[in-house]
Image (cartoon, rainbow, N blue to C red):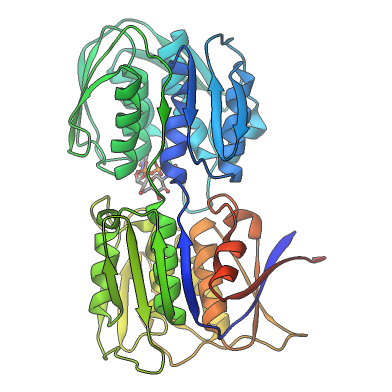
Length: 430
Ligand code: UD1
């Protein structure tokens, strides 16, 4: 098993270019079966979640080629095949091919998906939404079987603005003759990006980025050349890293608007942040600590609220901030495991149900080189939070389960070492 070995204490200086968004690339790639033709998706991160989805697409006959970081895909001739159960279980994004297979073949059969270890992650909103638009959905022996019975024009009301359910219903409705209105749709930038991609392919969709999305089915979608948006979560992670560890780093290939909720919280905590149309500069001078004693709160919510995907990283920042921070996690119940781990480095966190109370401490403390403090990533974002904690702690920290971080970061060691972190990937016996 690969692990990160980190020697803390270095401040970060320089520039990091942010990769394209995992959560935009996944639904865009899931849409490929809907297209008859060749598509180029530019600047796709080489991460394990994408590899697994490509494996699923290849099973349907999509021809796939990587060329200089771009994906060249040919989905002209596809065959209806069974999806490999093991691969489907590895990524939750596999559920998204359900909608696009229904759109292409009129039916689909899929194992229940897997994903991060952050909670129960039900898919009832996906399946009920598909039922509402006239798809016959049956769940049996760990499989989901769908058949498009009739083209039913309809309104789907989502009890919660689920990102995946919104994407799946869009994908299932985009081809054909039905008109579908999604009410209480998710408004995440990745949904807007998926719609921009589909529209370029010939789809007819309105209202993306608002809570009502209207899809008018079209007969066919054609291949295009498309560049997905930058990863706002990785942007936020690196902003938290600089804010926690100190230094002066400029993040490029970003859309600052997507990170406004985090920018505001960091500025309120005394971090200097400036931004232009496509870059964000984060400065924290550790010798001139402007951080005031300030109690604060983090409440996770659907976009444009504060993202659950940045909660662990900002939580780690808060563990070294003067004052108390109350974190309320409203989306995924297992997102507090990171705090049990940073407690091993000396953080003070008290957890009760969906609330974590973080009392800032002066320092986090790692171990000796021969005897580092060992912490373990429970999920991708917790893993990044632990890497930040290791960089902030004195001495040595090992973060176990580097493979979980590789689900979302092409090369976090490359990115952080380039701005001065002492971090390496090591392979150790258990
Ligand atoms: C997506 C993101 C993930 C992010 C999450 C919330 C991708 C690939 N992943 O995940 O990084 O953390 O949005 O911003 O884009 N829910 C149900 N029933 C359902 C679906 C969801 O109850 O059928 C609940 C979930 O348990 C959760 C909430 O709705 O509490 C939000 O989940 P959802 O927006 O669907 O997240 P994902 O699309 O899985």
